[in-house]
Image (tube, rainbow, N blue to C red; front, side, top):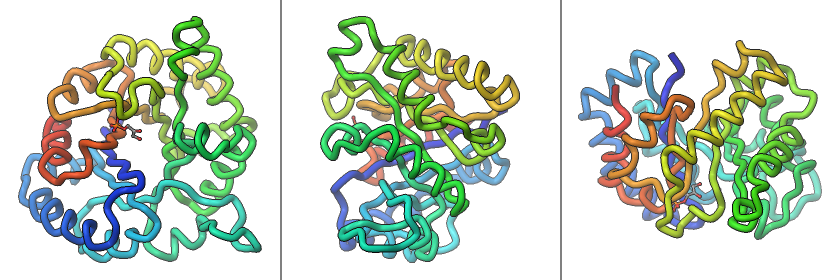
Length: 262
Ligand code: 13P
């Protein structure tokens, strides 16, 4: 059975002070939730927050010895160098991060990160032993023109090209986030999300073999809320959620986490 992965992507919200406030509330509620903690202890679930760079140190320190995972939202592919404004995977690791989001649609579309950039980032994260949450997803115009599957195939295959199957299964979590469902209140129906996740799993099977495909964790993201989490997670190929807005407040993120307990 694949583990569930419940992740909050804070985007450009929660500076250090707000992070400290979030953590003191969330971590105590998380550790007091016996059902969540026993799921985590039994390897059935992981819970993560992806904080802004400037808040990562606070997040790592405030998580204490709780099992909450702390990750970053981006990284550069080089270890160091003349790249003003960038942060490397090596630096993230030094800080205590274990995970990183790569290729969020806001990075692809607002900051024009290319598939080649993302491939280099994924490879660098693997070298640093960071787990990547690799995002793929189509624009509304892609969906309307019937090219959803072509877009997903291109993004997935370009990102994972020539990778070792074991690395894919163990170091990469794939998040399907239809761009039209992000921050819009429009959730893809659970069936639509399942259809694309099944397609991703099939692509992984065709490329890396059934063993890799069956082990790889797939997430859905886009207007996930406490109320729709259970129906999304009921889908066969969806193992977790990547949550934006509803992860910013401890109570709603905890409610989403509780809905994922099994
Ligand atoms: P929302 O949950 O705010 O729609 O954001 C989704 C997202 O982009 C998570 O990475």
